Amino acid sequence: MRDGQAEIIQHILDGTHLLAVMPTGAGKSLCFQIPAIVRSTKTIVVSPLVALIQDQTHSLQEIGVSAECIHSAKSRDDNIVAWKQFISGAGKMLYVSPERLMQPRMLHALQKHNIGMIVVDEAHCISKWGPSFRPDYESLSHLQSYFPHATLCAFTATADKATRTDIAQKLFQGNGHIIVKGFDRPNLSLAVQPKRQFKRTLIDYVHSKRGQNGIIYCLSRNNTETISGYLQENGIPAFAYHAGKDPSERMRLQNRFMSDSNVVMVATIAFGMGIDKPDIRFVIHANIPASMEAFYQEIGRAGRDGNPAETLLFDDLQDIVKRHRRLFEQHTSNAHKIGENARLQSLIGYAETAECRRKILMGYFDEQVENTHAEGCGNCDNCLHPPTVKNHTAEAIHILSAIDQTGQYFGANYIVDVVRGSKNQNIRPQHRDLACFGIGANTPKNLYQTVMRQLIARGYLYINFNKFGAVTLSPNSQNILRGIDTFDIITPNTITPPQKTDKKSKPSPVADMLQGADRELLHLLAVFSPTALDMLQGADRELLHRLKTLRLELARTKNVPAFVIFADKTLVHMTIKKPTTKRQFLAVHGVGQQKANSYSGVFCHAIKTFLDEK
Ligand code: ZN
Image (cartoon, rainbow, N blue to C red; front, top):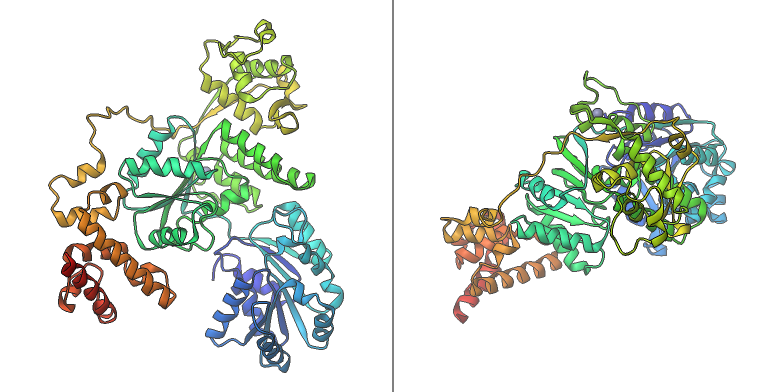
């Protein structure tokens, strides 16, 4: 049993109301399923998603637990059968959506039965403070008045302190336990780097992870295309994934990622839901995510097998400004924006800290980290290589004064330009006469950018979109201007300055690998690299295309992902070997006896037809 599960189960068995905050993948379902099975009373499970309801009831039924579900995707007759099963006593658990449960007829009918426990899954939806409030969830706050003797258990993977208190208050008037468990993932290393020489740094990093799966998260669709583009140019099998691609293409890429062992997915947040690949070895954030929750969820996709995996966040002033802008442009209430801003601000704090990053991350979720190492958590950049802390109060004063003297109406870049006395035409003539103009002419631009970022991270500056993204002073900034606060800059020590490489003399890694390779190897390599794929000769490419189409048809008929039929590698090898008999078919990479029995007929036929045509 995993960390926290036993404790939660015990509380539920004791009849204590409870809110458990556990990350996805920490074994949440078991925590309520076991008490539901053990207790003599009936249990209702409320879940917002039909897919989740179906999944869970199905897997319970498979192991012989009588669970029923009622939802809109089933026919009326099927729902009636499920209902009868449940009330007859044959079923112990009933899964329903909140809107079904809260129908007066349903409530009335259920009150006549011995409901001992009500589970509210995805409980954050009940709170207006949470990131995904659902009005139909709010009515669940009346549950206790309908079922005063039932134990109420709420589960969520994402809820900050305000949201938690709100959930507990709404569901059981705060008379219960709130338990936060399982957030720490010690096998994930945590690191942050300022975004400098980004392209080179990224390529070097991904090269060092050759043969491993990873995800690079980006802010925009454009970013995914650009980054995947230059990774491909450097021989890395990378693909852009975003909501703008058509569903079949997304499915194809996802299958490829799931079935191959060295694919890098360059994606927006559209990628990841339901991806349960255990051996993702790295997650990189090319741009800062929207919130601490989003960040945690995305890095959480790495290292699910428990083996070491790396996370790296690129920290950049422009990205922080963009995030604030997106937030401002959302069509949501001001209360929601304030909440989201706090979540983003926490993540900026994580990026700019000199402390143990694990401590900051876990502190955010209110989970304590037990430090077993003398050097802190032993698996974050700040613990392993303590950052350099240097006093830059003077530069901070330059920036704050420039913001003040220009009337708090300008963006971060403009302010840096003013301080450095830029010749930029956009600088207003009257600003060239200010005392702060050019005061830092000899200081590198990126130092001022870092100072600006850290001033924002530590609450000395706000980005104000009511003023079109102008940076404005916070009340705290007076403390620096008046000499009460000093301002230190934190410089991470993990950056390995990328070696300058002479582009002409350095062959691309793909070309490297291809030297002396025989034709078969070359073809096999094609599957790893779209650039190398171009090297496949015309006729073979056509055959490969036909085999892929055949595979897709088979996959559709059988309603399985394409890679379940054959991996891409196998199809490429098939293209080279061109088997026309079952015996030859068995010699293809990735073909076993069973697959040969199922598919040698159709594939050999397709290849034979192709050869006859040529
Ligand atoms: Zn640490």
